Image 1 (cartoon, rainbow, N blue to C red):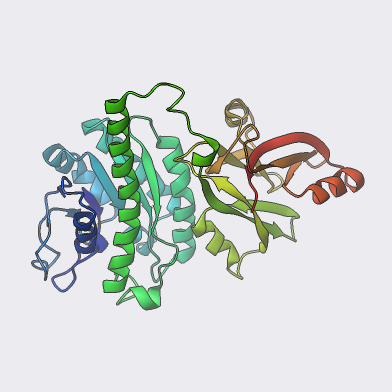
Image 2 (cartoon, rainbow, N blue to C red):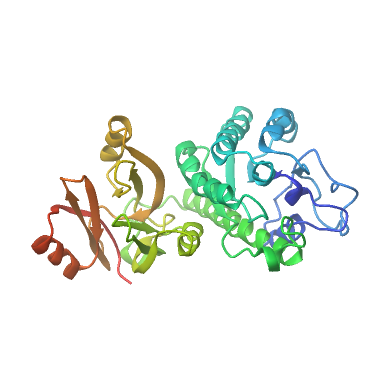
Length: 370
């Protein structure tokens, strides 16, 4: 099910991303895919090139709360196993807050699971739009947090970054809706996520058929793949460092209107499909400093007991023990002001130990060196 607004439905002159997505799935021989939904036409007439599966759940002009009013009926009828959600544009354009939109997206997820507890959900960080972009950026920052909070083993939520690399000037025809180039970009991002899902399913079936010995099913060092680059930013006004592997946040922080300056590419995370553990990020609301932890017990303790720490979600994956090709990420704490500091650089570690009032707390986690 492709669930959204006019960006999903389109008008009679636009294919929308649905057509190139279908074509990519066909070319990849994912022939069992069946688009479902209560709609077959675009907002004001038929699709100009109706040579693909036309079923969808795009509703032009709808905010997320308006989608919610009818979603249970649509889902009961269509019975989707996988749902691709691109919602929030009309909410932002109609000056609804990011916070309330995220809350409604959470209700969308709940409604989907009421009908199918095993539904797989792809949740988009939405494309740029012409107005109220501060709120749009805030929405896109909160979507990964929502996904982590709602993620279940039997009903996973995969965040798809539709924002990064999407240009209002080049990829839309009206600074809101995608042109053919924009449609292709959206389709490519959806396809990348779906390809991983279908490939994983095929591998799981193959593994079940082969019933390998337990030793053979373990990943070797050579099979552990590197993930995304982790970037380091610094706020000279507050003295706070921030690490991110999220391309949407990376591009946002590069904007001159932020207080953060780019410092360096620091290290490489672990591909979450290959191994490692989630690294969670907390923001200290008293100091503005960030705390990163791979320790699930520490994460739960902070969440349940320290009100001045706000969980901002899983940032990337890393190892909790040393693996081949990895380096330690060192963790410090300044007890007077209550801030943490992290570094992968051994020279910087030694400087902090010798010259600053930070206590060395040990190795936070391990990641790949650049």
